[in-house]
Image (cartoon, rainbow, N blue to C red; front, side):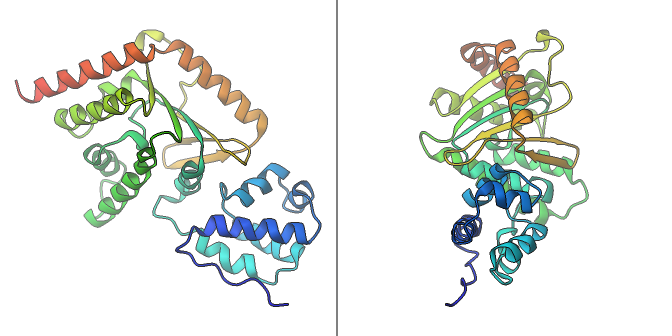
Length: 279
């Protein structure tokens, strides 16, 4: 019987590779938990690989080929699924984000990528990479704007963002850029496309002062959480960690302004920025 064919990287390679993994695992008579043991991972991790919410890494591909008798199929094709327009530390999280049914995010210092305008994104990316050529900045901005198209769907994913007041008051790019960015956030909230809350300065100390977090829920795979620092990021599926950070998000939402008051603050700041730019 002929072996599986190489995957076409233009047709969602991670999803195709995940489907092939499920087929090969079931054919070998292995449960997700048993295969996970061979990978020194959990059964839920295997489920995420099969659902396409996690990518198969080269070290996993070698073990999969050996355990499932697939020759070098996964080793050859995991390279196609790894191609990404995003920075390496964020690529897997961005791919998972595209499959999520619900995203809950706390942003301490900047407007989240899914809510950014091109001008705001360019200012942020240029600050991250001050010596990069303009072509690289253009590519990064294009990738970030591609992510925002997730919100073109009128109902999913659910996006619930808690923004620290600092993210709204830090002038990024210029006051005109900030006015446009905040009006964009307000417009999405007015259309009911996102839930936005602002965590005000007077909320004081809180449980997530050390950084940002993003919780992602999926229709047919266990939830994930992503948290990041300067030039680094980590995607985590440990149930205890996900539960702990979900509780953190709930505390933040409880301490934040209501969506109605948050929207009023966002619009007020947008108006202030616009007036400061054109007195």
